[in-house]
Image 1 (cartoon, rainbow, N blue to C red):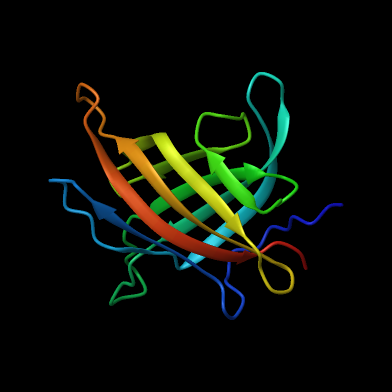
Image 2: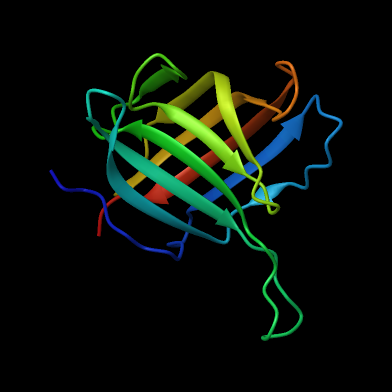
Length: 152
């Protein structure tokens, strides 16, 4: 089953959003304006996975200027099987966040939950602890939800 497509816009009823908790870092709510879904090989065993890249690019008041984007990377099993997936438990389950200044925050613990979805979408939520770079294990919690089209 090749259910993955590459599309940058959202279909009606689809979304990716996230909010941060327990952090001193300023973190405006993440609301994706576009996304890309692609099939990838993950880990040493080259496990098939689906990578959802959600992009939050704030609107600009002029056409000539574009603000830097923030991006969420959610890797899930290519089967889209409903269930609760702990980070770091499988090669095909991972999470990271890239801020507008290109700082990357890796998910070190937490889970991604895939839920039943209507039609040709994959739906889920996440609750992930992200490590702050340059600290001795300091983290913040990122919670969010997503529903994206998986097939055309």
